Image (tube, rainbow, N blue to C red; front, side, top):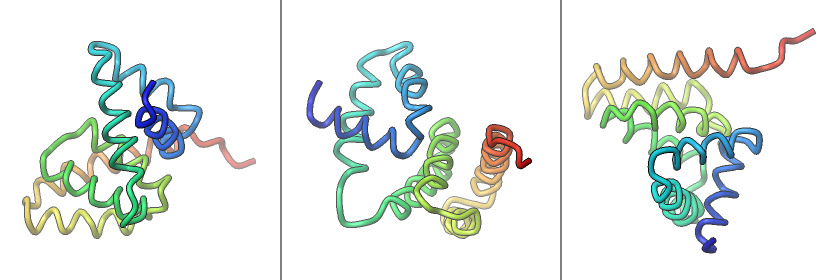
Length: 130
């Protein structure tokens, strides 16, 4: 594997959790193995590992772009990563107001629906407090 792939795999593992990385990469390669290689190498290995802005800011930028474009599958994944990268729900909501101003309130609404689903999934996956 290339150095970019290895860096990308490690970066995605930090952002989705070691326990989830194999399932994610398997989903990416299920129909088209080259897709997984390129996503991990380019997006993970070359983009997410760049300097200049922190991971939380990168996550908020990604969420806004994906919400504006209506890319629901990637939005859900990036919401989960944003929360792991230190973004709060309040910060995500504020970022989505930027989407509403430039891409329309329906884009924000759709993103909020996905955020609600994502938070419910995370809550369901979290161990209950004893």
